[in-house]
Image (cartoon, rainbow, N blue to C red; front, side, top):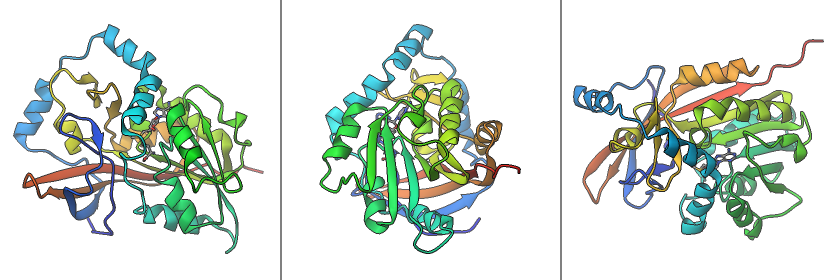
Length: 298
Ligand SMILES: C[S@@+](CC[C@H](N)C(=O)[O-])C[C@H]1O[C@@H](n2cnc3c(N)ncnc32)[C@H](O)[C@@H]1O
């Protein structure tokens, strides 16, 4: 495993609510791994003992209310919850690498953009982009459009359920160089993840790629879910009704390759953050991957 630059990430609050804790948590190190991160025997036991699932009725309601719950999340938190992703150096590097010539204007799709914490820093750093940005939550999209940096010459924001609404209604087919999926797939029911991945495939240019980052198996946020939060294997509900899946790289590989993508990279990223206030060392696990749409055969 080799260390590399630190970045910031979405993390979960004590009650399992999502939060970003830039002021209280400090990243100590970051490493990459090919293997699932092992946990202590006590944690393993805790995870094994947590086998009672939320009732089917409640699960159906959570699925029906998924959009409403994300919209309420943004109503409560406005634009203040996630910190701006100036950390997305990796994305910037990947974007640079996607250019076939120096001044090429790249077309990006930010799928599940939230209120634009990644989108606006990206546009600020690299004005030679056109970004399509979509989200499930109408309120989040509204926040994006109200941002003083929102400019229709460089960005088009629209509301969309990635599992239902055809992206080609807003984005021309095969027009996107790079799509980002950052902490979004984990919010989608595992049975529907393939729909979002195939939807994105349609708007990607042949040779275009998806940059993926999300929660990994055994992330701290998974371990601290209380009994009564489990929806299925590696799938949990937070107190606010939003849901979170914790990925293995094998599942991602299977989801993307089944949809026709080719894997470029797919690995666990481990970070350890220290919460100075509580004196806690918190191990975070994310999965970071890149898949591309193959060039068509002539
Ligand atoms: C944890 S937030 C991440 C937001 C943003 N990518 C970021 O990193 O700041 C998850 C986002 O996924 C969106 N989302 C969940 N399900 C979705 C779906 N089916 N289609 C589109 N967006 C969805 C939510 O509305 C929410 O904004």
